[in-house]
Amino acid sequence: MPKKIGELKAMLRKAGFECRRIRGSHERWIHEALPEVPVTITGKDSQDAKPYLEKLVRAALQILKEKEQEQ
Image 1 (cartoon, rainbow, N blue to C red):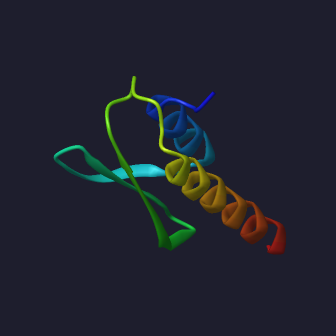
Image 2 (tube, rainbow, N blue to C red):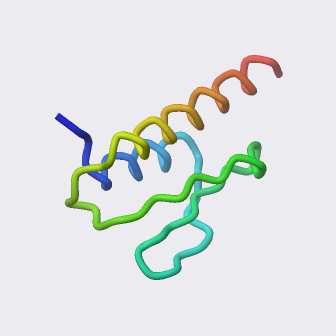
Image 3 (tube, rainbow, N blue to C red):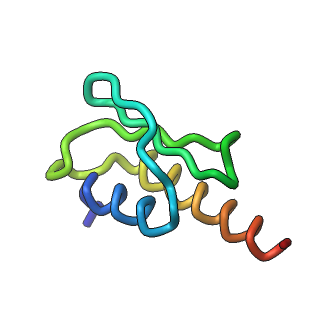
């Protein structure tokens, strides 16, 4: 079962990402340590997330985890 858009946003918020810009239904999430890896999420919180969005969020969280381990 796919995650909801709201769940993806909660995962990003918990990892320290902030919503920096909103245009229509597009939200750009950025982390201070990873300004070069913005995550753009589209849709309403109650909608099912597309598989590519779930992969994008997981990839960004993995990059953040690896960067934190380096330091």
